[in-house]
Image (tube, rainbow, N blue to C red; front, side):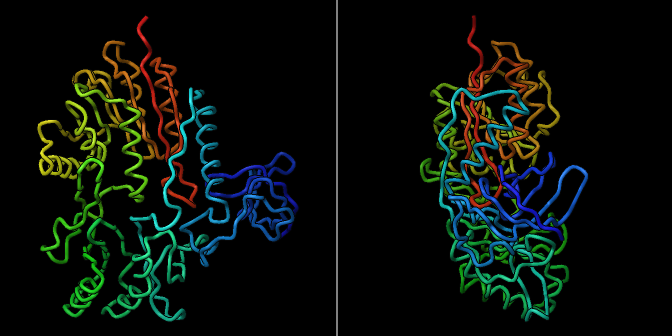
Length: 441
């Protein structure tokens, strides 16, 4: 492996330093913008090279000592060596670059970033499990940064402390089961009253196994879910635990039950902040009719229903819309909400017209974005358009694409946009953007 001195210009979304040598991009793992490093070239490709830092010749002023002893080995984090405030600045630049280069748009105003806790924030996680006899038994944790091995870790700073404290006991528990080599993963979902652990087991559990799980759960306030085969086989170990897993939205007087396989935000503190910010940006009036597209469990729908006249939630998963409807009933909001199941990646302007006119709209799609919805909105007549759209995104690239459609084809104005630091120490960029319909001439 050859070594070269490189000047680092920026970071990519995997938190690798970006350098240029003779016009060719080099991605340097472990390097930060502004640094000069000695890097070993790991792989050469026609359009780029990859490298790893061997020695830092000139460190960045924003470099910090990673607090986690497993950083660099564990693949759960990529940016612990960068000051948290600088991480947010990097993500803001990624968002602005995507909007400019992909969507050919610029926000009228850059929103202040939404911050939350830098550690202990990850309330959802998928832990890999592997029996490795030469390392002393069962490993439970995230996969290593390079490769498919499970990191040999006994704690994790981004998990809540009580979940981090479960890693070592879980190693012992799985090791005591009848077939520890047939347990590939454990999913974690932390609620306001219990922590759910979803055990994927490829062979039937014995009665002794079940007794061990129950004893573990009772001692540590853990609710066990089991998955013997595909996702449709997920079920509670004990039916009496039904309804225990939920997260609270105290500002709105709501408690949202869910299953560990349902999509929910992993960062509960930021989720609460994001909901409040979205409602503020929508500027809802008491008589407004609002659409919540890609509504999921009703994470935004139910808070919206506490201030709007009517909210229509639309989601592609029937299971999620059923749970959203049940949550609305439990909170006495069924008269102000309506839910339907529909593939929002395959809609058109006539479908949108048939829904009726909305005063406000919230869009919160997965990484694929909402291209079909954006094109339908752009095709509406001025009198049919929502006057304001708030778009919550987990992909700057697809947000930028959809923003370009709304602005250049629909005449919407990108009033503001900013980042949401939902996933500290990772390259994941969550963001929020506000679009206003053009004013009538």
